[in-house]
View 1: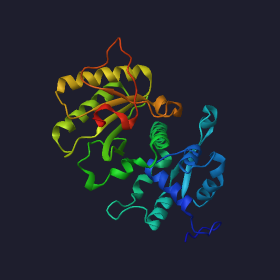
View 2 (view 1 turned 90 degrees about the vertical axis):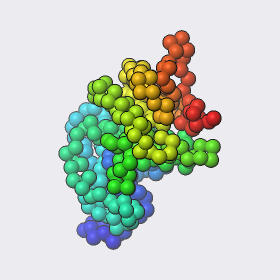
View 3 (view 1 turned 120 degrees about the vertical axis):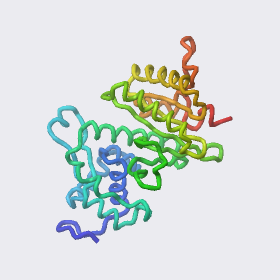
Length: 283
């Protein structure tokens, strides 16, 4: 029971779920939270958010610049909210809630917030397409000692999906328009080095890379093909897309473009496919 001067009722499951969303993805806007909870629109959860905010379990980033840019408020979990989650036992004993990650949320950069909401957008889109066949683990889920065999720095997410009765794994890496291209190249090389290390004992997950725009996407694909040729590494697969595609439900999930060391044929358009229909997962 939370002892709040205004609201003394115990949190319900949907309120706890909001706290958990914010712990997992760090930041979210009301439209995203509504979609996560299968509500028709953001208005359907405003009262719930207000209660949590009044209880100081969540807070939001919003100022005049947000209004001028037409940006929605970005909600985040407070330390008090993290302590409430601990009481509800939402995490396994060996993966406890890390309260420390909430301490700097109110001062964190706008770029970080933007990235967090992009990852949540990708997740929500994947769930719309693939439903309960998909599991999605963020850095908040994986930053524990037992996952030290994961590539470092951690991917934006680890995705597990049931395909042809087998579990298939993916590393998700989303780039922002602020990211210099050398940072993207370095990340490609880090995944190739990880593949060579053999730290992932089974078939290494496919690396999904999301580009912020069409120019970066083209450069990304050329560079992946080049690095694959240079490394002679055959055990790792890549697929790419643009952020715009991932959140456009009109595409019905056909947004992933496989790439190998041969690269793209200039005279042949590349055809996107769904996450569960990548060529190497359907042999």
